[in-house]
Image 1 (cartoon, rainbow, N blue to C red):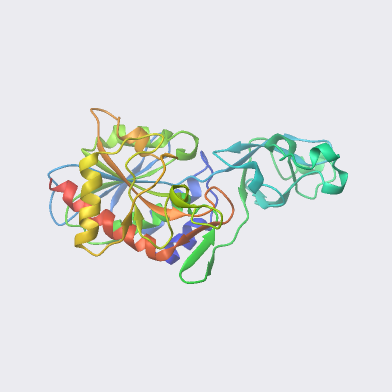
Image 2 (tube, rainbow, N blue to C red):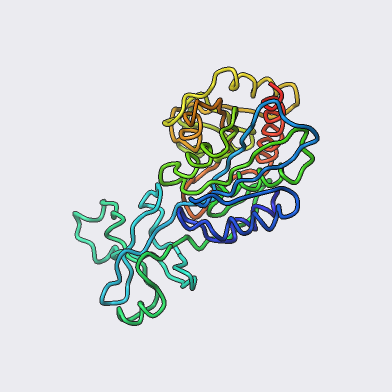
Length: 339
């Protein structure tokens, strides 16, 4: 899946601007499965298996990433912006970005430390105190290459390092998209539905529409989730660990997961030599929050990849965990189709 991940992370796709990601996914599945694009921009894919499924199963992964949007162009040519999705202001400082259709290079600036008052030195700048410097010297010059409402994304390369680790932006959730595409390319035992959703990062909006349209009996949400297995963090606050396999949670801030499906995931992992772990804190959320309460209700489980430094330009995953997610999702899908 490494080449798929690199390809999907190589294009921009903040919430509401997922077009390039969607086009890439279509290019990968063209001729392999039937698909349509709904009114909100979700890519809905039907993949025929060897036989019809007893139950309709939906596999979901979101295409969008966190980022920024241009809200104002200052007289000096710098850009003010608003956050799209949950981004900690600390990850902005000094970061390289790309802006708009022209992919204009810029960086996020802040008042230099030697200009700060003593009372300001310990204060963390707020997002609205930052700006994007694109090298323009006036508003007119800046307006010649960018517009209000332009999307802004982190300019960060995909890099492999260490023992099977991968660093890059938008791994949340282009990894999930790569897993879903690899499932579509495989020979499935049963017919399955796939939803590549939009606007997850700003409230799981696309998933609500996709689930309504598909009306599944079961859903598998492919995601990344916060791992805090880093120095200075101990016990339950580490949440989950890179290298320990797929993450199946019992509860997050949007969903209390189906207990039987939770137990099934761990049983399948044990029977098939797949590493499976849980989250040791109730935190975060994903498309499951919208899917599980869609229509008459959908039995839903999330299978996630542990990820350090989530929602930053330098997310870090371990590729072996991605293989665990893929294998577990395939097994769960077969179980649900014939339950």
